[in-house]
Length: 172
Ligand SMILES: [Fe+2]
Ligand SMILES: [Fe+2]
Image 1 (cartoon, helix red, strand yellow):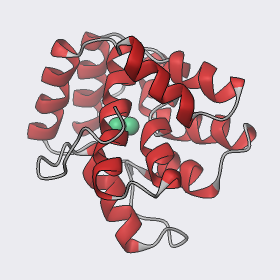
Image 2 (cartoon, protein in one colour):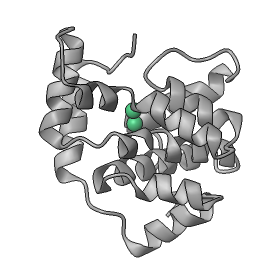
Image 3 (tube, protein in one colour):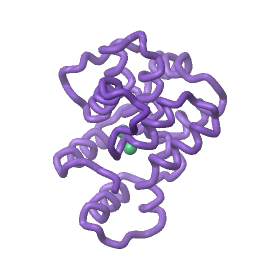
């Protein structure tokens, strides 16, 4: 089963959603430098502004502690692109997350949104992305797959959880 995080984590993501700013020109240009194909660009920029901001900040956190690890930076940058393939507004996201945690039935669009990990991973795999990028997109709400080393997974997971001790302006 997917792990969506604690109620506190969901509340933090909701707050992040409400206050997120669209990427500025310099930030978008840094993202383009990290992306390798038109398909990757379409997947990244097909996300809502809030998800672009979340992914950019996750990539920043990784770059802050592992600046030479382009594979991990790209994995953080692309991990939620499935949300652009199953778009849902803020209220729908909150409702879907609550229904999931309470194991209640939900409309198809909500369950599609909750499958954004697999949707994104399949698209990234088809686009020819490296294994780490595909693995983090597929498993970021689950346990670490054996193919990804523990220390790499720890960096990636921390980047997605807004761990404050990781410095965050290295890819601006
Ligand atoms: Fe996600
Ligand atoms: Fe995320």
